[in-house]
Structure formats: C-alpha cells, structure tokens
Amino acid sequence: MQRQKISGKANQFTESVIREMTRVALQYGAVNLAQGFPDFACPQELKQAAYEAIEADVNQYAITWGDRPFREAIAKKVHWYLGLDINPETQITVTCGSTEAMAAVMLATVDPGDEVIVFEPYYENYGPDAILAGATPRYVTLHPPHWTFDETQLRQAFNANTKAIIVNTPHNPTGKVFTREELTLIAELCQKWDVLAFTDEIYEHILYDGAQHIALATLPGMENRTVTINGLSKTYSVTGWRVGYIFANPELTAAIRKVHDFLTVGAPAPLQRAGVAAMQLPQSYYEELAKLYQKKRDNILQILDRVGIPYFLPQGAYYVLADISKFGYKTDVEFTYNLIKNIGVAVVPGSSFFNQPQKGHSLIRFCFSKRPETLQAAGDRLLKLQTTLQSTP
Image (cartoon, rainbow, N blue to C red; front, side, top):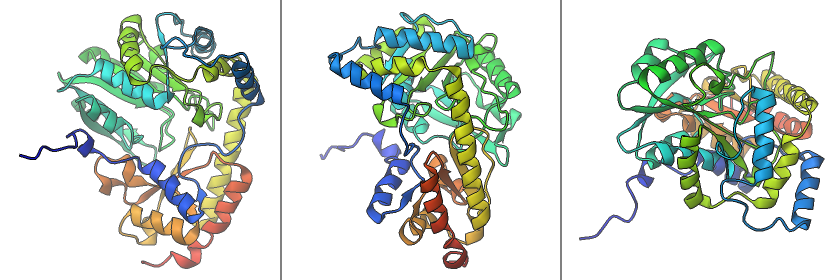
C-alpha cells in the first residue's frame, strides 16, 4: 500500500497568494502594489542601531523569548501608547515576525476540535494557522461598504467549542478600524463563553481621518484573556527584519514561549537590539508617520478616481480594496494576471481573503506603502485600463 506523503493539513490550503503576486510582478516587470512592504528607507536611527549592534558583536543567540533590553523597551512603549503595564520578564515573547507570532499563539493555546472565529475577509495566514493547530476556522462576515459585522451572526458563532477569536485592527485587507462599540461586544462574548482573543495590531499607528486605535486588551475584563500581536515591520518600515512580539498574561506567555522556542529558537539578535531604538522614537515620529500615509492613501485614491475604479475608503493600514466588477472579468484572478501582464501593475486578487473564493471575485487589493514616484508610475500604467480593459474579455 502506498502511503500518502503530504499531510491532510497541508492539503487544506495553498501557498501565499500575496507572495506569489510579488514573484509574478518580478517576472513581468510590473509595479508591485501587491505585497505589503514599503519601498522606501526605514528611520536612520534603526539603521545606525543595527550597525552598532553588529559591530558590538551582538551576533549570537539572544534569550529565546527575546533580548532583555528590547523586551524592556517594548514594555515602556506599550505603557505610554496603550496605558498597559506589562512585565517584560513574564509577559513578552519576541518572535520572527508577527506571522510566526500568530502561529506560535495558535499552537500554544488551541487544540484539535476547537473552533477559532475569524472575520472575513481576512489576512490570508489566519485560516492556515488555525488548520495547522488542528482547529476549525469559523468565519463571520464583514459587510461592505463600512465592513461592519452582523451582531446576530457573531453571537451565533460563539459556542462551547470556541477557543478564540482573531481581531485584526486596523484591518488587512479592508482598512477597517474596529470601533469601541464593536470591541465591547466582542469582549462581552469572550467573557460569556470563556474565549481567548488574539489581536493582530501591526498597523496600530497607521490611521486616517481621526480614526482611533483601541487595543482590546485595554477593555474591562480583557487584559488576561487577550494575546496581543505586533512587530516592527509596518510601523518602522523593516518588513525584512522579521522581528515581531507578543504580550499576554504570564500563564499564556509561558506556553507561547515553549512553542516559539521549538519553532524558531529566536529572532535575529542584532535586529532585536536595534528594535530598542524603534521603541524609543518620540511621539512625533508616529504623528508624522500618520501624515505620511494619509498622503499616500489620498494619492492612490486620486489615481483610482482618475482611472475609474470604485473602492472602499480605508480608515487604517495601508491597503485599499477596489471593486472590479465593471470590467467584466469572470474572476479576480483572471483580472489580476491580465493587469500584471498587460498593464504592468501587480495587485492581490480579493479571493485570497475569503474562505469561499467566489466571494472575492469582484475585489482586488492595492498596497500604497510606496514612494510617490512608484505610485505615479502605477497610476500612469493604470490609465491604460480605460482603453484596454473596459470591455468584457
């Protein structure tokens, strides 16, 4: 008898569509507005701190759950921004990016047979993370144009098998920022059903039009049942450094640290030391960051207006979902490949953010964390849509 060589878990999901779009963009020389990374420099303070750490021979393993100076700096930053007092010795775990962080959290807390609630559309890692942990994702729909959820559907999603709910705010791919009222309802349900909350807050400082980031861990009754995930990647424009972090209560942290230790041992030591400089940047840095991204958002929206592509206004993060139904393509994937090959602009097909791909067939995601000249180049190419893609293919 021939044994199946691929696990049942691995057969339940595909490779990352987002990262695939970058590879296809490189193949065709397209402007990459797909993968969520800035194409501009990180703060000079971080570069200098990384140089100095390497020169000082901070090149061997750090403590597996994180370099102490970095953990202490994280705790101080969390205190001034969120108002939470966390112990860097017992409540913080440093990981290889927020991607590993979510996987470690799932593996440390979720068992086969458990259910994990995921808002849909969702960042593509969440479903596979739940599957790898042996859990069943249970999807709750976010409805356009404001990406609100139905309270009845959310209440029905909670049951005796629910172990956790994932909350990503500001949200990728929609740009939604969860309101205090929405988070209060989530907190109420978590406490009623004794459910954990895994929050992905990687875009916490990228906010528009007066939107406010509210950390679920700050709501009454949630500090000890929330696992907060964050990292350096987005706020400090160092996605390639792969330095993330988690904070949670000591009991959850102890379990997460064990899993993290056997997943990756530890994040890069000199880059953790450089992370201290990131955590010590003044408040003015975050104010200027928000202004910078406000300009980039307005720029991409002007481009989409000029080209004639409808979109949903993002409140945070650095993506915009657009509606391509007017172009007459059967699927978002077909549209996306034609956009890359014939127009020279790479985006992400919306179906990659849904459990049932057909729900995203009219959507694509643009990333606008790019230099003005990159956005301009994309805009110039997108104008060709008015003459080459307006009719049904």
